[in-house]
Length: 121
Length: 236
Image (cartoon, rainbow over all chains, first blue to last red; front, side, top):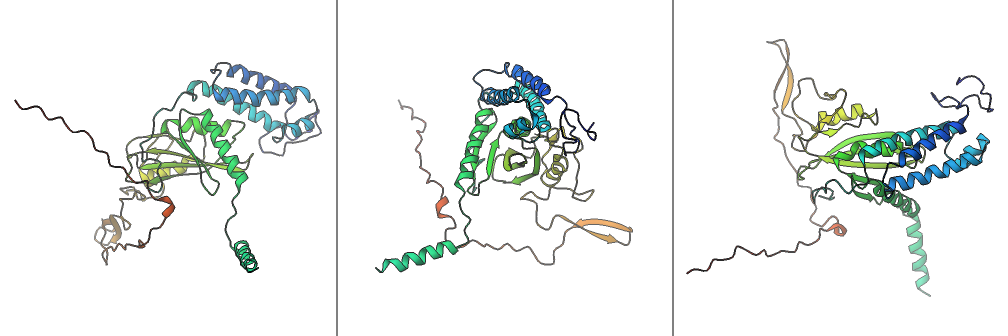
């Protein structure tokens, strides 16, 4: 799959080791972004992580919905090849699921001792 | 009039001096990103600082190692996929003497970040190996040299010291010459370890200059407080 010519795009390979050319990247991105937004619903509305991630995902989702040509979409997203954008979305999805367990929006766990971060000693 | 040649001389001098120019734009960008991360992870981040050489540092609580490193690796605006370095610093005067330092690099955004935590001799710290495979040998080195135990490490054993070596060499209380020296003993026909014998006793030179080194970094003067003592009981 990575070596042969992909039918939908004029790109034979991504040029990156281990990253195959994605067929139907719009569909894959649509699924991933919808999943991320679904996972983010479980996070409290005032959490900064939810706010910023929803902003990023909605921006990218709108661009994916509007632009059908893959090369132009890559240029508009300005984040590397479309396969790399798919990897970024997968990472964001796994991160969102872990954030629900960790709950990092809560206040500070423990204050450090007063001399801990003083430099010079 | 006569001020002109002085001004020309001064500007010439300053343009020839090899002083690193201050990059205000990068400083602002790093400050903004530091505030962004601190806003998203207030549970673990205790302090954020940007050095004058434009290096961003996040100071976190040890419980937050895996959450913060995973966030920095996976979040779209961060993408610090590369663990460049993992070290420790020993400051014996502190309550938590070891400071664990992670240096991360983002290839997508061409920027670096430093994450620092703390621990003492006995408290274990979560291993970063589930997040970055590169942390494996670095954590073995920190264990060997400082004695910091990493929980959930796949294979935590010595990496640089000799097989039966006792002690953690990079600690500040470990002497420069060590405690043992090795030699081949012909009677027992093997290498033996014996307490170290120095030909000359260890000399420590006081290299402090009589003048104050950093006048801009003087500690704030301590104000003495008078605390109320125990009240005297009325004698009958």
